[in-house]
Structures are given as C-alpha cells and as structure tokens.
Length: 486
Ligand SMILES: *[C@@H]1O[C@H](CO)[C@@H](O)[C@H](O)[C@H]1NC(C)=O
Ligand SMILES: *[C@@H]1O[C@H](CO)[C@@H](O)[C@H](O)[C@H]1NC(C)=O
Ligand SMILES: *[C@@H]1O[C@H](CO)[C@@H](O)[C@H](O)[C@H]1NC(C)=O
Ligand SMILES: *[C@@H]1O[C@H](CO)[C@@H](O)[C@H](O)[C@H]1NC(C)=O
Ligand SMILES: *[C@@H]1O[C@H](CO)[C@@H](O)[C@H](O)[C@H]1NC(C)=O
Ligand SMILES: *[C@@H]1O[C@H](CO)[C@@H](O)[C@H](O)[C@H]1NC(C)=O
Ligand SMILES: *[C@@H]1O[C@H](CO)[C@@H](O)[C@H](O)[C@H]1NC(C)=O
Image (tube, rainbow, N blue to C red; front, top):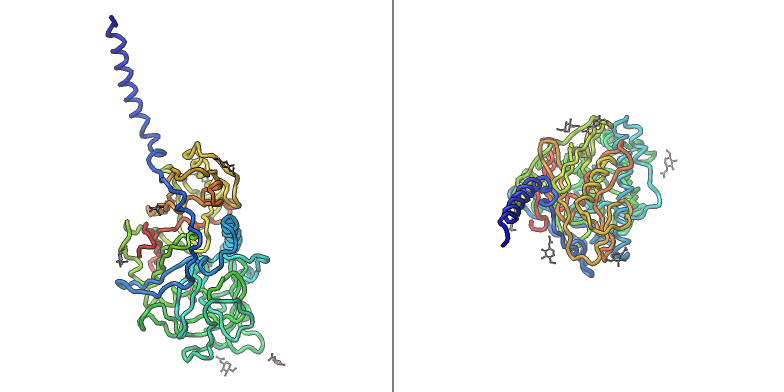
C-alpha cells in the first residue's frame, strides 16, 4: 500500500509552485502583455494598385477644413522593385536628416550663416524625400502640391519658366490671373521676407520684383519672385485668402516628383499657418497615411476644429511646443522617453544641451541618440528573442528573417512626452519590410550619428495618429486614429 506521505508532499510542492508563479508573473508581465500580433502581409502593398495622383476636393466639418492627403508615391511611376524602392526611401531620408541637423544648428547662430547653409546643395541625389501631397487653389487654378512642416514658403512653378521640371497640372501663368500682384523689389515687405527666408540679394541688378531662393534638405531648390495671389484651401469663398504671399517659381529643380509646388507649414511669419492665423487661429492637424501603402489616404486639416477629438479613439493629449531664440521654422517638443513592450527607456538631454526633439512630417524613420537607440535595440531584441536575425538594411540595423512567418508578435512601441502625452505607435509603424519575401524585416528606428545631433520624430511612427499643431497655444497634441476613416 502506498503511504499518503508522497501525496501530501506533492500537494505542498504544487501550491508552492503556484505561489512562485504568481510572484514572478508581474515582473515578466511587461514583456508578455504589451505586444502586437502583426500580419506581415499587411505591411506591404499589393501589386498593380497605383491609383491616381490628385487628391480629392476638400470638405468642411464642424469648423474644420479637411484636405485629403496622399502619399507622394502616387505621383511617380513604380520603376524600381520593392527592395530598391525601400532603399531609395531611406537613402533620401538620410540626406534630409543631415541637412535638418545643419539647419537646426546654424539657425541658432546669426542669420548670415543660415543663408549659406540653405544655399548649399547636396549634389547627385535624384530621389524624393518630401512625402505627402494635397490639392490647393492658387489664383483660379487647382494644383497638387507637396506638404512640408520643415519649411515656410508656399510656392508653385510659374510661367515664364527659366527651368521647370515636368509636372502633372498646367503650369501657373500669373499674367492670366487678375488677382496676381508681384511684390516689388524695393518694398519694405520684400525686405521683411528677405530676412525671414534668409536670402541675401532679393533685388539683383535689373530686377523689379522681389526675388527668393529656397533650398531643401535633399538639395532640391526653387527660385523665382514673390507675389500676392488668392489662395483657396476650401470649397467656398470663406476659405479664400486674398493677397496670400507665395513664391512664383521660375527656376525649380529637384525631388518634387510631378507636384506643382509645395506648401510650407513651418512656424515663421511667411508660412501658410502664420498667414492664415486670422481665420484658422494658427492651428492645423494631420493624420498621415502609410508611406509604403499606396492605397491609403489621410488628411490635413485647418482651424479650431482641428483640435476636436471627433472620430478619435482617444482624447488628444498635449505636450508643449518648445521654442528657442533663432529657431523659427521647426517644431520642437520634449520627448522624454521611449517604451518597448512597456519597458521605459528614458531620454537624457543633459549631456548635449539640445532644446528637445524635432517633429517632422518629411523625415521617414525616427532618429534617436546613439545611447537611447542602443538601449531600445537591446530591449527589442530581448523581447523578440527567438526570431531569426537578418543583416542590417541601410540605416536600420535590427533586422529579422521572417520568411515563412505569416504573423509575428512584436513589442509595442510608445513615445512619451513631457506633460504625460504619448504616441502609441501604430502596428504599421514598428517594422520596415526591406525584402518583399520578408527575409529582411527591420525595426523602423535608427540611431543618430552622435549624441550632439537632434532627435527626430519621423512620419513612419506618426501613422494613424492625429497630430495637432497649435502654434498660438504653443502645444502639440496626439490622438490615435485610423486616418483613412475620416
Ligand atoms: C490585415 O489584413 C487582414 C486580411 O489580410 C485584414 O482583415 C486586417 O484588417 C488587416 N489589418 C490591418 C490593421 O490592416
Ligand atoms: C521703388 O522703385 C520704383 C521705381 O523703380 C519707385 O517708383 C518707387 O517709388 C520705389 N518705392 C520705394 C518704396 O522705394
Ligand atoms: C541691366 O542693366 C544694365 C545697366 O544697369 C544694362 O546695361 C544691361 O543691359 C541690363 N541687362 C538686362 C538683361 O536687362
Ligand atoms: C466620423 O466618422 C463617420 C463615419 O466613419 C463619418 O460619417 C463622419 O463624417 C466623421 N466625422 C468627423 C467629424 O470626421
Ligand atoms: C544624464 O546624463 C548626465 C551627463 O552625462 C548623467 O550625469 C546623468 O546620470 C544622466 N541621467 C540619466 C537618467 O541617465
Ligand atoms: C523635459 O522634460 C523633463 C521631464 O519633465 C524635464 O526634466 C526637462 O527639463 C525637460 N526639458 C526641456 C528642454 O524642457
Ligand atoms: C531566411 O530563412 C529561410 C528559412 O526560414 C532561409 O531559407 C533563407 O535562406 C533565409 N534568407 C536569408 C536572406 O537569410
């Protein structure tokens, strides 16, 4: 007969085991609980779906003016294969980031060196890094233009062109527009804009109109004359801005695809946001579609309604927009930490004296201090232990070979800001599919070259988030939202 003793022992050890499990669960809970199960097929777009380039007409809802926003890829032919397209996207991203860093650093010095930096061209780059397009009205013509929060002047290509690239719409002809008024070269207005844009010779010899030159992060530029024109953003006369200052671009070169020009949503007095403050109160917001999927669209919205939380799955949470004397164009915020599957990695600015981090709609991949990136990478690898690794891809060095996987479980990614606001990064903003067969899928974050550079919050991590810029209230807001459902 078996003695009851062993049974008794077994019961005790069982309950001890239960207690032990209960005790350790909370500590491992963070890596178990906060994960996304991602279907890999959702991260790459379908073949053959290259829809048309022009976004639809604007619409109005509850004091908010909404313009449909599409990815710029819709305006160019898919000539490259998947791998090359993904490589191209990151290559142009690198040159934008390098120039942004140079601009942010020099903007804090006297304006003299600023213009020199802006005029510097990054040669040999024939790719595009400005990502989104909307349709606006200039004079009585509709134009598809790029959207950029990293610059201020709004411009379109103009006749008579000295050198215009090929665009989809007809080129704007100011001589046919009764509402066009050139800004004269010796006016005080011209001098003001000259200072704002950091140009030196706005009045070259024999020139009667106010000249401008703007160069972008990727080496693209536009050169021409400033004028006043009617700008229409909406459907009715309420949304017309008479006497809007814009650039009539006579010599334009670079990575503008087939767009007719660009709208500048920076913070300086010449930006579209500043010029429309009386109507929109300096508030705009956007919800960005995926830079990879060509069949999704988002929106750009102006006005107090842009603050509203209609259709958001959560309330908008705000953090302060920081300003630094001398920095007029860019938007800075205090990014205080990043969490991976609920494990927080703090950002420490104290060693390098930055004002904070930049938020940019034109940079694709967010850039982190090397020290922060290293910690983020280590935590991500720890929580994805067991996934087969793959070689690095361009600036992305945390990569996996997921061929054969249909679905993968990855930790959540959150950005934390001063004041408690956070971005809960959408599952489409965590992994970057470098190879179509998923044999190279990378964490979509990259390291800066040094701790002295500025961290940048890029658009890949802003997908499916309503980002509110309140330039009068000096605050920046975030709310998760499915962009295509507006
Ligand atoms: C992912 O794809 C599946 C079907 O392929 C679809 O049902 C699901 O809604 C998609 N998820 C997202 C987030 O797009
Ligand atoms: C600008 O120049 C024109 C002639 O070129 C002159 O008639 C006008 O008075 C000048 N305006 C100012 C503000 O100097
Ligand atoms: C510019 O002005 C100078 C005199 O100031 C004149 O000799 C020259 O022909 C002009 N050039 C053009 C292109 O008008
Ligand atoms: C909210 O979404 C619904 C349907 O998804 C749409 O009909 C409505 O216009 C949206 N409202 C706003 C303010 O965007
Ligand atoms: C931040 O950096 C400073 C200087 O390098 C260092 O003394 C401090 O311990 C760091 N703080 C944290 C929380 O890492
Ligand atoms: C950013 O926020 C942290 C935490 O609230 C604070 O200690 C730090 O001073 C802030 N930095 C800036 C530049 O505002
Ligand atoms: C990825 O893994 C598969 C097996 O799952 C293997 O056949 C393939 O060679 C790997 N590809 C690369 C690029 O390492």
